[in-house]
Image 1 (cartoon, one colour):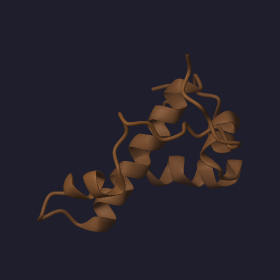
Image 2 (cartoon, rainbow, N blue to C red):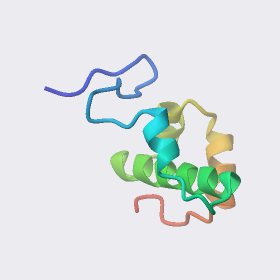
Image 3 (cartoon, rainbow, N blue to C red):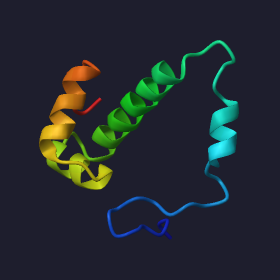
Length: 84
């Protein structure tokens, strides 16, 4: 049975997912928050692209952003291959 999803396609929280506190504990003491958030954003976009087989319009919809915002973030994070 697939995980329940909200209206925007985000998977509902399950016991196997990280809480905000658990995620915060993963940030190294010496790591810059801005750098950490940028790397997290890049990883989320890359994962969404892989799940959507590179369909950028679908990724933008699932992540709750415009297609132009996704395009900006792809360039910002230098994500070239949309399916990897």
